[in-house]
Structures are given as structure tokens and as C-alpha cells.
Length: 311
Image: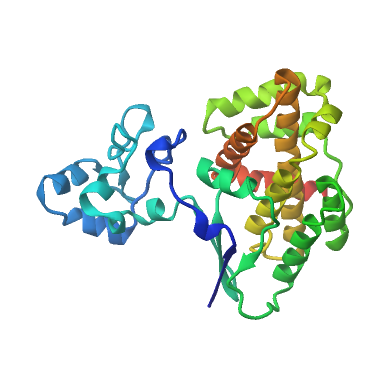
């Protein structure tokens, strides 16, 4: 079975205690069966501490503390499980994050999720186009072939990023969707929200988008357009190939477009208010969007359903 991944994948490193948005805070951490058995038999005082902080139920999970903090995240932002038992002792969800895995008929594709600030910087900070590694032979799967062609179109730097999406829509035989910002913001506000900061951002955009200086923002970002290319390629790579059919693949292509439009619009509104927008600002907008949408299956598939009615 082939294992395919972006060329930046192996460069990822967790920044541990320097992380401002720890994945050990605010997320329910389920423990897989194999690791749960290991924790159940761990010896010594730390073994007892493990068992005292695990909720036994249909799916064992850590009992989060104050501010939904993992009980093993210490005051330095480091993991006491790793310190006491080693990296190999982590449950699968902690070991995998922020990576994602798409198991496809002919291959397994992995990548890094934008919800992690370190991953976001790594992905959006690349000047050169992303390349996929690991494929030993040409794939015969129709969806993957379409996806790879879409990525090449999105990397055509002779055109504006959003013009490149029109070429993608032509490739998959759908009309370019009309993106009504106000309606789309209302849809996003109707979804479950994991962090109230996202509510504040969406409300801010809804109240200020009519006065946003999109032309000025476009000029301001002229030497940083690769950031939105990397965003577009990321969303297509992550969501397109595991679509069950070509119609669903088209839905996911529109989702990639809408995601980039949303992040671009938030950036334009912030730029208009601040007079600037740093690389770190874009990374934070992308991180927040990803954590709210991609890491809630209910939210993600609700948007897929909304888009399915549009095309």
C-alpha cells in the first residue's frame, strides 16, 4: 500500500511549551483500546495518577481539569505522560495530532491539519508549490486523477488564486458558484462553535465587511499570494480524494473555494481596521477556521450539505 504525503510533511515538529493554542486544552481526548490497557497496568505512583484521571466508559478518555486542560499537561506546557513513560506511551489521538489520514482504495494519504499553529506556519510559509511524495506509480483512480489535476491548476502562478478556482470548476464540469458573503457568514454562525473567539470573528466580519477595502488588501498581499495558494491546495488535498463520487468531489472543491474566500474576507476586514495583516495573523485566522470547521464532523458535513444544494 502506497503512503503519500506533502513534501513538507516530514519537516513538522511540535513546538510543545511554546504553543499558544495547545491541543491538550479544550479537546476531549479519547484513549484507544490498546493504550487504555497499557495505562490500566502501568505501575508506580504515575500509573495510579493515570488511572485516577481516566473516565472509564464506552470510550475511555482523560478527565479534563480547569479550563478543559488535560490533567497531564504541566505548568511548562509539556506532557507528563511523555516525561514519565516516553513518546511511545501516548494514545493514538495524541500521537497522530495534528496529522490526518485518508485511507483510499489504492493508497493511504497523510497530511498536517491547519488547526495546529506550527503546522499552519509550515504550510502557509512555503514559497514553492507543494509536491506529493510517496507515489511509486501512476494512480488509476478517477477521483485522485481529478484531484491532482486540480492541484496543478491551483499552482498556476500566471493567474490570481481565485481565478485558478474557475479553472478547477471547469475541470470538474460545474459552474463557478456565487459566493454571498452575508449568507455564508450566517451559515457559519448557525454551526456549533467550539471557541467563542470564532463567534467574535464572524460577528466582526458580518458588521464590517461592507466597508472592507478588498482592493487595498489585494494590493497589500500581492507579494504574499502564495499563502492563499497553499491554503487552496491544502483544502483540495485534504478533502477531495476521499469523496465517494465525482459529485461529492465537486462539493468538496467548492468547500475549498468557500474556505479560502472566508479566510481571505476575514483578512481583508482585519486589514481594513488595522492597516496591516501579518503572516502570523493569516496563520491564526486559518488555524481558527480549521479547528472550528474541519475538526467538527457535524460542522464539516453541514457545510458539505449546504454546498450540495448550491451546485
